[in-house]
Amino acid sequence: PNRQPHLHESIATISDLCHKLILHKERGVEFVTDLDLKADPGMYIQRLLSYQLYPLDLRNMRQEDPSVIITYEKDNALKIIPKNYDVISVIDDNKVIATRRKE
Image (cartoon, rainbow, N blue to C red; front, side, top):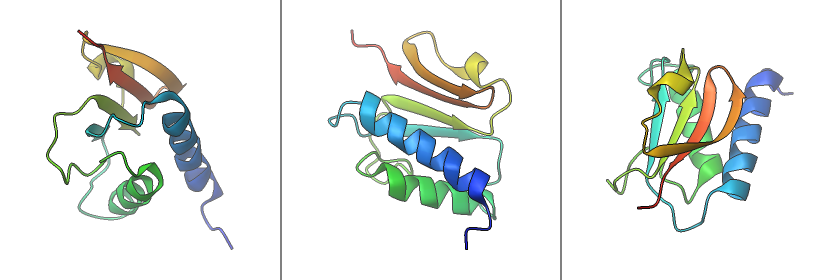
């Protein structure tokens, strides 16, 4: 049984939006969160989201310049999005997806 339905639902929402709204050629992702990624639940969330978002590189394994910002459980998420990024989805106050504007 799924013990954390709200958690899995929010990850599925982010994953679905990313796959629908972000071009497949975009790879580098900056994952911004207030969660501790060295311990659960933050580590679990990052790994699950990383799996769901593949081929987007949420863990920066390819060390590419990020062209996507995903915030998750980040206070004032909209305020940390740089001016050269376009917000493509606001899931809630703490979860935002943004892509770097093409020059």
